[in-house]
Length: 460
Image (tube, rainbow, N blue to C red):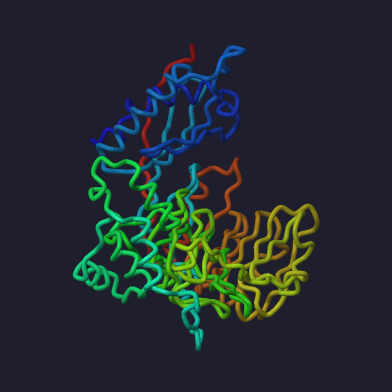
């Protein structure tokens, strides 16, 4: 038997959970739930506050850390990366522990026991991750693009640098499946950016950074920032939209086969040459891809020459206030009604916390591009109105709303993914049962469950 399925592995943690949640466990239907992964955990544990004037120390959490590491060790032995669980513990100490493994059809949750997005169609991704660049007829390099000037300037700044050979550049082009633009070739002919070329000169990397205006990747580390390089969980990806306006220099894409990443800004944002510019952009312009955003990129310079010469572009997209949002959020602090969100270009609708009468979906019926709907539990007047939204690829609802659709055999078969919005007190097994019903409709593997039982004895 795997240690992860041995009650003794969990016993120290269950004792801590009982001590921290005695009142809620004693209530009818009382349970506690959590998640443990190789790199962290989310557990409802009460921690002792440190003495006044002293910061919290590792030793203050020693019992918690030891109990968690016991489970993490069992995960490693099982070749697993995470486990979700829920447990009921009686006042006498009888404990029942349910272990949950989402498997290939369930995306990992973010710090909670409930299953996250259900991938109903294997390999599917949200529409923005399928979007390719729009053609921009007539796009040309910026007038400032000058490979000769670029190369001479870099040789002056980096006289001792080792450049890439023609064969190395050709090998990179073959690996990437795209011809590198002339400016990028000129840069790497001066320096190939390898740490081993700098030996014990620890200041060399800073000299390259100052010369190029970014942390330069070695030639062998160049990559294409297509959509797959920017992964995102379905429930968040479904609420993104690709928008490129006529004044935009950069297309609002998740990624592009024409974004060649060659550096970093030092803070995790990627620097790339853009071969698929927006309507007002230039072929070969330099963009920054933020690690904090799921789509789009910022224009840094009209050309690599401008970046090296420290001439930043002043061109920016002009977002017009009269452009209706393709992603609309109706809640107590945003849009005041569904009617206020309706327009032909609406792609995603989120209905959040709402303190008024439940809402009808009739205003969005027939919208040609609506593909994602998320509705907080209790916000819909009639969940069966969803059956009329025939273009949905993603749907997020509360358990009660999903129950209505399942009982009426009205779950939209156009869906590629779904999510169950379980409130904090929703029993994970209830949510798992619903998830299994939805997965079964698409013949997808269900959520694996294992039940362990033991006796913790009376509380001390």
